[in-house]
Length: 207
Image (cartoon, rainbow, N blue to C red; front, side, top):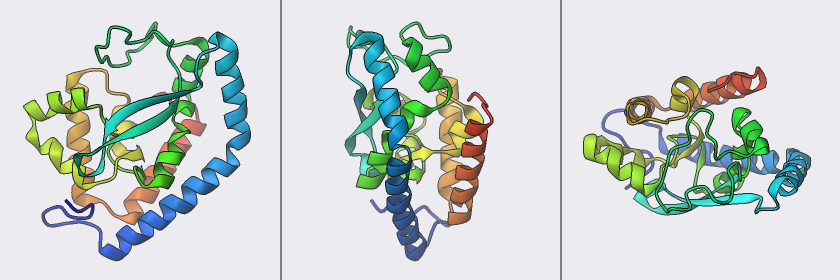
């Protein structure tokens, strides 16, 4: 399954190549520029409960293949101790004090620069989901599998306009937006999404 194919519209092979080059350059620059912030966040997480700093979770990505997504740990080490996947809710009691701040300002996502650099993700694309929830979405709308034509993204129009998905209704709305992005994607649209998302985060918008 190719990353740049969807019915009528899509990015040209050259645009796809430029997108990947920008992902590599941007993620490398991002890791270098935010390295002091990485250190500060690590210290705060470790100081709060002594648990691991980086949270690793299997997600489904390009081609429907699993990969390990990295985030700064924002929840207690005992979250999902029963092994049952659960969505993060508003005012989720599983969030640590530091984790709540990281989530509100989207700083927990910074380690995903590494996922982008490795080619498992792109700066813009549908947010990757866990297999448990991906299967639930596909049981309602099989078109979810079309998203596997793209690398999942650090930013997405669905996250910008639909926020975190804490219900199935929001998951299906996110899917609608992701499919719209798949049909109309372009480098210009990617730049627009990145600009609007970064501007929203800097301005303190909660989504």
